Length: 234
Length: 234
DNA sequence: TCCAAAAAATGATATATACCAATATACTGA
DNA sequence: TCAGTATATTGGTATATATCATTTTTTGGA
Image (cartoon, rainbow over all chains, first blue to last red; front, side, top):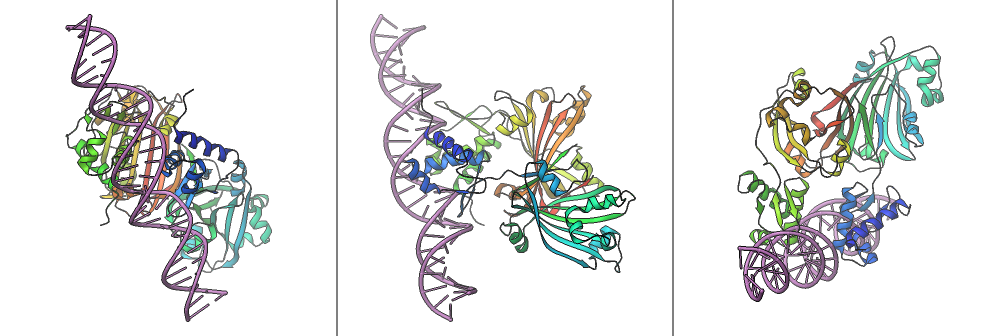
């Protein structure tokens, strides 16, 4: 049987290493120079093999840093109804978790007043959270809720299953409005999400309403561009 | 202004030769060895330039024979047609326009085969366009359609009201699947859209199906992050 | 201990050369 | 004139080396 070109053999070898778990998602693989020695080929031949893996989306290269095993993006189905982050992650076989950065009562900003139909004298609960899938940071979220809606609940109830407790107390969750846009990661966001300043961010702003038309939550979320995408069926 | 890599400059030069009519569809272009002398570069550098043109579907290589201009000439400006993008812009009081970068028949890429349920031997029509609102570039779009679906129509019909002519010939347009993600602008995209390399891009990929479940269009669009957002109601 | 600069490591670009496999062309003899 | 063979041309694969740009790590001084 005729041998494949060396660069294709190396392509397959690297792929097997990834599939077998020798390298995992996010891992940096050995440098081109190292691997060319390991495989006993020229660096150009090794580069050609890696390029085909990059073209397939299996690897990604970062100038000056190295070559990494690509992550498969977390996906949110946008055509489904209002879904919590936790449900979304579990539906994709990932373990959701979150870390609360801040949780406090405050006066609403202009945009919060606008989105939640509030006045200056009203108070809001503002929660800042980092959300993870399988311990990898996926997004940073600021959720704002009119304070009067959370008065009857403690922090634990609000942070873990607020929609649920709302429904249990007789409220009916209605529709939501969203905008999706892109931006670059700020210094602060990059620290929270374990990325670099200037990386691509997918930003979601959503206002959710009760069935009676009253807005009850305004959420601003920044997703890591490399790790997240929205999926929509029309 | 910083010079591009030599292989990209040569890429552009060869593209201009084709667009200007120096070489036409089906013509064999000078050999790699000849062109490396002409451009005064190494054959490997010349090969890299040609590879990017092959990847774009503009050239095709045949071992032992040469490198040929792919079917159907890259063409120039077209007047904009009525599209959903146009309706969207007008609804917001903006003047829509577009510029066709390329329009040609090619063999499908792996992702195009996957999305459109095609085989290697099938052909596709691939259109690249920049779209503007009030003369400001908003997005760069690549639409791919199975060639057999456009055989009966001319370029004007396809670019201006393809959905309409499809419907008039008895097809029923069904559903669509979209993914929305974010990324950073590449060198090429930043030139097209008048932004800087590394700026935030909102990327949309959509596969549209006929009512019988057959995919008939696969579109990839990159929107300038600063100038575009999606709005959805759930 | 911290910060800035230097050094090292990384992928990217480029050159030069050689050989291989497929195809096209030229040449020679019947 | 045609068929077979030899030669030339073509793209493909591969090696070796150098330099550049970007990022990370190390080092040394404050």
